[in-house]
Image (cartoon, rainbow, N blue to C red; front, side, top):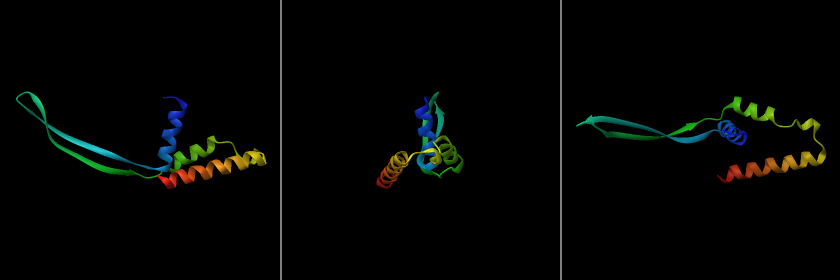
Length: 87
């Protein structure tokens, strides 16, 4: 995994997500595995505060930012919020 993939996974964990949990039950009949049951359940993974904290600690502290950098960061965060609301 590269840094971008790790950061994306951490962000996903920090925000929470939904996933499908699949449980399959097999039996052997005449030497072959035969699928007997397949259960698919939607699972909601809640937001993880530790992951959120790690993401926030990684970012540049706002105290050391210039006014232009603060304005750009505000615009970026507002854009992210709009994207999340659109999902």
